[in-house]
Image (tube, one colour):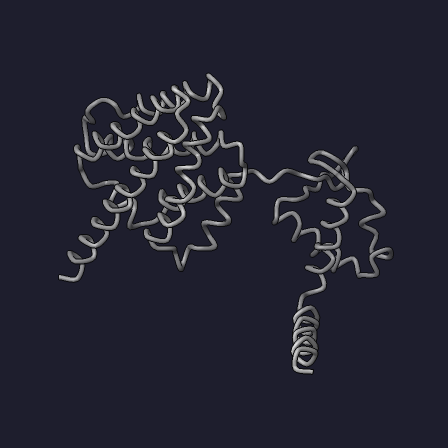
Length: 261
């Protein structure tokens, strides 16, 4: 009886939440589901009868708001004039990252939060690369990111750009991941590191030894990838993530102590 009572209470709570949702959001979800279930792809026109207020049993104003929701989400785009209509669109990764960044804008994750995830997925990205996920062109692109910071920086600003180029190395690995979800998460974490104020301040700190350490790890990693040594690549990247986290946390703590004085 207790289990039935709990289930009833949960269903009632769910129903209550559903009633609180705005009508345009519910209609937007219904249109989205129909697009997905019908197999429409970017560039396809959404059939006009799917957007008929009478068919959907809503007012024109509610439908207009529902379409605005879908446009904001990047799922559709409206075109006017001859050949116009509502079309399915693909969400650009950069737009998705920006929206997710904004989700954490006022309550950003900690550096430890970010590295807790990076330590899990970055070694797997490296292992996948060594396992053959990189094309020759992709391998060249990885080497190209290293060339951006293998020379001594001529100024503090150039050293800062080199630090960001180190992140580009990891982004290139992520973009070539055979697991698109892992790759997406990896690039998102890099986006957070680029945008967080504390990280930008750390990256601006001059540290020639750090550049040499990063180069050392990445050159070793490239050799392991080229040799197809999966376990070695995973081991090198795991060590790199541990050291990177240690450095970032130490610098963040030093920054906080200086500000507290």
